[in-house]
Image (cartoon, rainbow, N blue to C red):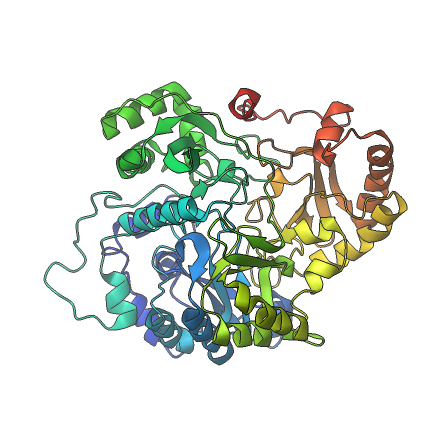
Length: 567
């Protein structure tokens, strides 16, 4: 597919309808027509195939084992126990008997075949969850801090995120017609899209809400971010951030990851107008000729931050106030039980790469099903692929704990190293078509291989942040890992080092295209130095910078969040 064919497909799609109905009805193939493979993303799904068996099927003169990934739209990653049970049933009836928590607080179903696709979509919608705009060149799932320190403020921020998510939904009724059998009405295919226009955005767009002191959403990795400013226990407003993004292309100097700029402060009542101004600025000024340069970060870099901020202010009809001070302690999850200001309890479970399935000795899918049957609060997915059993009364903790222990859901809390508990990875092989190397399947193995090195140097409990990505596109936000493996080829990775533990500084390429043995041999002496030379409370990435092992990467617009903002 050529770069500009995507723009043509969007323009000619009849507001995201294309020929999807015909593609779905075609019994000859398990695939969709090429243009419809683009359009179905806007409906929350990707066409994939099982790459583990691709060569064998080719030898047998069979088409690839086509299947579909479906992603939910769940602002802030919040679902009720009843919704959990419904999603669990979908996973076992229509998908591959697993749920997967994404790095954007959504669920992904894998392994859905074409003839089950519509039934699966209908079942998701029956749970009062949808998949509309979960993928495609539109605003994606809106992230929100998952494990609150201040429950009342968190609820307020969550409400704003849900409002923004709804505001940015496409107006097209294509989703409802194709999947939910809504009757066509006059004007179908010609709906007005006042925010997105005729060809939607140049590329995907990501929004996150952070609630200091925890940056668990990696707000600076998003196109648009809102940092909640709490004064006297109340939500005063938000610092606005723009221009974050993780995607890059190996060997292409015209692409790079980027942390966002903090451009000013707004009050809550200004949020919708400012967000709309940001997204329409990207709609009109973003690069539609070169897709790999189409993200908002490049729009800012190409036009200049000052011009883009002026455009946003003009469209919103406001002048941004100076950014207010904030403090981020870290960008991980607070695992285990935490009590909120309302005396309710929240249990954050550590789940390897967000995959929830029944495996020998770890029946996690069954365990969470049983918890959902008795839980009266809600479930919250985190941006680090973990799960919060939220809003638990003190009297209900014992029953939850019993089920957690019975189904080994506490394995991730009790076992392994602090590095393993904080690590996460993208799906990669066998289903992601972009993957160059393993990620999700390799994470437990690599964590196990690195454990003896950590033990040797007394670093078992050192909270070092590891992220693994199967390709440079950055779904696991690898460029914000103190240690990151970015796939180059099967069994080979770029080793990135030196991000900080707050998500405010990118890492740097340290070794290129190396295998596991070389990675471990490279890390071992660095662990030794860190153990012997680190300062009190000094993170691994901070130590590597202070000691001169790594420097800031030489990206054309590289920057880090100014320290004065969190002094």
